[in-house]
Image 1 (tube, rainbow, N blue to C red):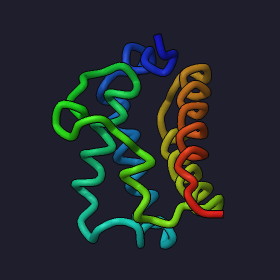
Image 2 (cartoon, rainbow, N blue to C red):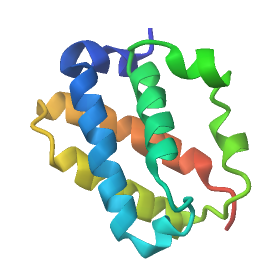
Image 3 (cartoon, helix red, strand yellow):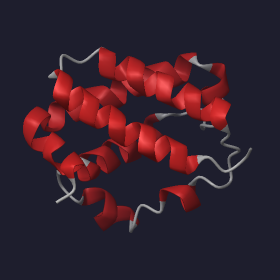
Image 4 (cartoon, helix red, strand yellow):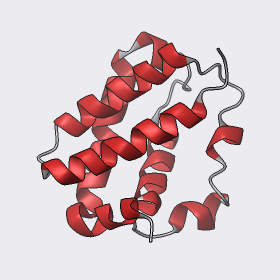
Length: 124
């Protein structure tokens, strides 16, 4: 079993929803990230919410609606270098900091986000 899939049991859907909301607050205030998104962030926010629910052990709604995540392929149209990765991680970590999570759960989630963010780099 993927260790990340235990997160849903430990924090529940509401915390994942709140994390997603906090993350998009950070996106909205970060000009480097903001330019990657459409004017209306609600669709992106909903997709991330469903994705995180699934990744962390919740319902499989994301895959049922959109198919296999194929994250790297879905993000190839945007230039993602180490700087952009850092903007994304900083936004996600700021969002995580706003939740009252057990430190072990937070560390597990951070580990996942670092792994995925590094995988998404598609430019030097």
